[in-house]
Image (tube, rainbow, N blue to C red):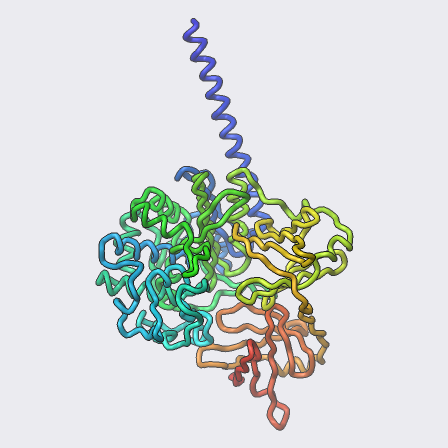
Length: 551
């Protein structure tokens, strides 16, 4: 009887533990469902979310629509373009080849691409992997948008940027760079004798069992593919066409959340590369001078409320993605969306914080401060890489503006701690030797900003133009053969859509002169002698681009 009583007692204890675990799982599911449903409506482009603990799925769901035109709801098995998460696969492929003795990350790239003009500098594979090469990123060049529909071979793609001036000496700075991963893809092909897509398929997808993952294609029939969308001022539209030969080894892979869990589990189990190789990828790296940077090889170090993360995000025409792994908790969160809008990274960070029991504060939890307390931190702050952020106060609300970006509200949690919407990005203000200072933290990485005297960029005053004048602007304007700006007028408002970009409202400052509020840019319409609008000039970043009106 004593033995039976002991078993009964043990069963009750186990039953209680299992019941408590089930309740916690239920609570987490309800929290995530409620949170994501508040971000994605049933009639918007969708998102697929997966959370795993110890390699096992503890949450999996999808929200919104996989196809707006056909009224197809998003499902967890939808296939998305994952954008720059592709870089993890490219980095691991390089490390696999290194383990096979076919290359070293310390090798000069001219060993594999002899014709590449390094401008007298030594650029190592290491510099390509951690974005310290100084090579200009081809996606920042105007020609990228004009050739978005053009299929290119890796060599043709390299020709686009190889003769651009170096931005800095290799290893002296960190600057996220897609060109480096194009070169890595080509090196994989040179060393392995296989195409990049075939190498990834044979050595990763097939080995790991990623049956719903692909080197991206716009023509191949892919079951459960989610259609890609962009957001405009007036709603959603189909995203612009992008030949997936262009993102190549920097961003062309397509996958599902379940397949990406298989990928993460293979990485954690050292199935593809040894732990010593993985350590080089996930532990950040250093500049030549010894300064630490959070980016390693395809992964970036971060932090969620004191818990270490390794992660990567992706953004590509019509899609966005973010994957976060917390090694100490052995929790993986992946989010894939079929819109290049919103902040999937903020959503996955919040879900990861919920999953480890360390939820971020919400803007609803903000405290009330006096105008004097808020005014204390108003002004400009200078960060590394010539980044300037302005903090301004209007009607009792503090705002943050990074020059060249848009204004965002920040909310006080204490007198010195402020959060952006979502809670994952923060400001911590303080004074040092009487000067204003701020710690800006995003993805667990902190940058220091020093208070400077610089005026807040003035917001231009817009004027109202007669309807008859507005009717003269609509049309398609060609800046380059495949790069256009489409001007539309709706309800006496003027909207501009550049190839591959979102639609934005533009505001009149004078007849024929308009400006954007989301970026520092202007559009000036040009007329013939008889007053007919024949072209426009886009003024941005010190450049003037003329666009002839086609229709």
